[in-house]
Image (tube, rainbow, N blue to C red; front, side, top):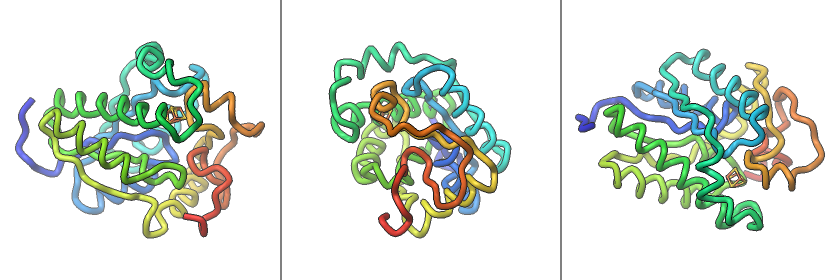
Length: 209
Ligand code: SF4
């Protein structure tokens, strides 16, 4: 769907904790935020629903539309499963970002939303330049405009921990896919508290960012 550049932005939200800063900050800049949660990279199903509840809490806290497709891990496995042996942070994750952002770009196009960005760059474990580069590419392929952001800057990551604690959001302890679950530390997921990072920042102190 064509669009006129206005203030509507599709925010790809990878998880609730990571959405706590981008969502209100974009609104504060005057953007009309629509969230999009891909979810096919989250395994098993029970974990997906825990994370979906956190994403819904973020949308309800700040208001705005949230688009959630049906849970569909099979297409994700069909695209990324051959990279199961890759270490976290390597080729499988690059492909995973692309899968998620391509899905987001397709939704933005279908909805006639001209602007896009992602919450992924709040994570201290992920490369924001790579994520923004993929984002620009997939957005352009759908005739959308990518908004470059590195949310972890300016205390973004610390703020996300505080907001996560304030809202009592579920804090995951592995990135999402079954391969990251296999490699996680043996920690049980629990609500956020300040000083404890969500999975994307597990074990990372604020000063390391
Ligand atoms: S570890 Fe995270 S980013 Fe990497 S493939 Fe799995 S879900 Fe995707």
